[in-house]
Length: 452
Image (cartoon, rainbow, N blue to C red; front, side, top):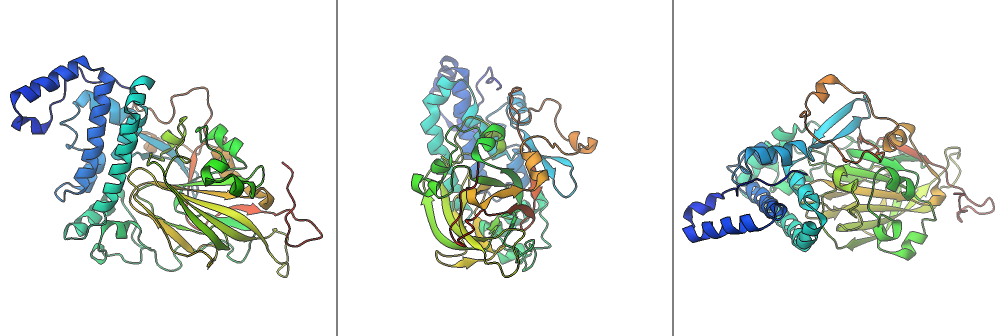
């Protein structure tokens, strides 16, 4: 990580402060470790990122890219090191073309990354509870700001559409004036039929739950090897229940759907099912960006999340139209993240959802769904997704895309010993896998444990 500036950055409000206040701040800056000072500034930067979202004068693009509003905290050299070189962005593969694309990380996510990982362990430990409380309070506050009504909402939405180049052609309400709040726009609906699910009547086909960046794994062991480095990333920890986890067998498969701010932020059911339960687990608001997930930090199992258990109707690809489907549990875990205030659901417990149905939504920010299929479902993920998730497929590099990356930018983990997968850009309703449940031949309802 970069080092702190040699001289203390002067805050804009200091022009109105007594000279003794400025002198005391100078003394503190000199006697405290540089890394301690820098973490303090990063916490201030996170507050400013949320403050600026409430200022209608600040253009959304400038807020996201930090043009001007962080210059009172960081000099040019420090800003370049912190926000242009490190935690700059991530590679993704566009599934439709196979091209390896690059996506810049929003500035608030870069600040969040540095708050989590900047400086030696001792300094991070001293500030850890402060950081956790800050990320939580600012995430809740961001949600409150974006739930506000008023004349500034239309400009904020228009700026957001322009900044992220959002395609509005499939959106149900295209006019920004049709939304009362920014969050209402953020969780916007699409026109009926805009995301038709693959093979809607074939219960062996699993489809993507979101417009997202996707990773798939045959079990949690492989997921920890190539992607999620948190030591507590286990099914009991994720679901918050040992008893519930046992229903999925010893080796359940999983898919991780990561949504970025520019995405359509409603999630859909990957299968036809009945909703058994929805449980909210309180937690933190860490960023779910891959550069945090790829670190030994328990992001998914620490963050605030909703656990929805679906009793899914599943069948084998070889089943005939007259063969009854079987019912197996699928866990749909909607995970909140940095500046994501809430998760909403479109269905209630006991109701049936069809494959591709609008299941729920996230409010502002990036967020993630982890979907777990029981061992008995015997899921086989599509080959291209599997190869990308284990790093075997890296996509086709295009010179024009690679040229967008700053020469000194550090992309992904700094470790040279680990092998990491890469996310694949998919759309809601695309086929992503096939299940082939293994059942006792003498019963049409009792699943037989599959061999590991």
